[in-house]
Amino acid sequence: MIKIWIAMSSFSFKMALTATLKMSTCFWSLLMNTLTTLWTTLCKCCILAAGLAMSQVHAAEEKFPIRPVTLLVPQTPGGANDAIARVLAQKLSEQTGQSFVVENRPGAGGNVGTAAAAKAKPDGYTLLVTADSVQVINPALYAKTGFDPVKDFEPVAPLAKAGYVLVANPTFAANTMAEFISLAKTQPGKYAIASAGNGTLNHLIAEMLQKAVDIKLQHIPYKGASFAATDVVSGQVPLSVQSVPSSIAFIKSGKLKVLGVVNEKRVLALPDAPTIGETVKGFGTTPWYGMFAPAGTPKPLTQFLQNEIAKALDDPEVRAKLATLGCEPFKGTSDQLALIVRDDLVRWAKIVKESGATVD
Image (cartoon, rainbow, N blue to C red; front, top):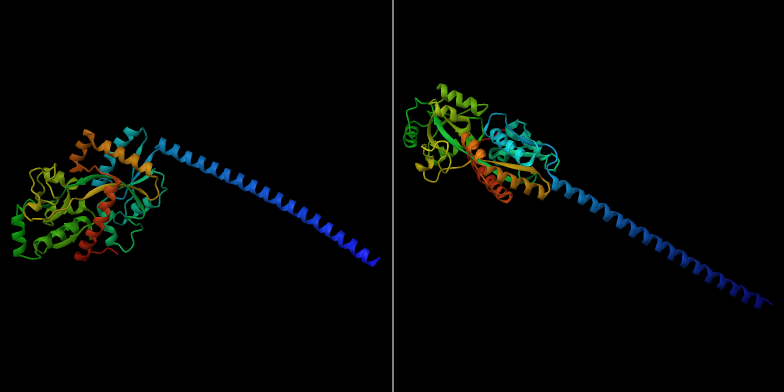
């Protein structure tokens, strides 16, 4: 009887175990099927959401701009960069049907406005219009600029080239570069040269010139180019390097005379003024202005802006307005502007180091 009971118990256990295993297998199979269905549904939803988001982005890009665009200018109103930005803002507004508004954000040699642009939302509605002095010289002058000129920006396009000139008070003894160099060599350190401030483009160009011709001038830094120009006009200081936009009115009225053009080529606004390079072989630099977008701005938007800028710079009215400012259109691509920035960062870092100029 015991054997029979054991056999029956064993049989019952096996049956129960088999049933349990079958139920467990069904449960896990059902669970796995359910999880697989949920996962598939979730993936489909994610793909659908991503596709919808991308379609919305593309739609926004296709309609760009659908609201006003801010052009941040990191200098005060009235300067060359501000004037160039306003000429282009007007034309871009006409071409796109949306307002392009200039907002001046000066401070710390242009660092304040540039840092603000770097931190702006990368949607194409906040753009930086700046001078090379801020983008490629300031990083060598300041310990902290608040921005990285390469990592924090997407180059959009170059905009214009500006003329720069070595000017003197009309009573200054020299009238040509050759006469000026000869005069400066005979009395090292006697003659003063005014700049817009320590480490500014005006200052560094003067340092380049002194090194190129082996002369010594006394540097007098001012708090802006206009103050420096005013004191040269009044005779307080005999010399200064000035942008053509900030000095052309004084030149045309005879209150300043041009000893030489800093650019590699003569500028259209002053066709009779010789370049410094015509006397000092190999000397010359051409300051530029460009447009940048915050890093991460979609490529279709920067490409759209590049195309619109090229169209604007081809417009005769825009070209005429730039000419009155002593500037010339500088058509180019975002890739070309990126290369210019990288090359100029190296070139100006060397010049700043040799000059000993610092701001911080």
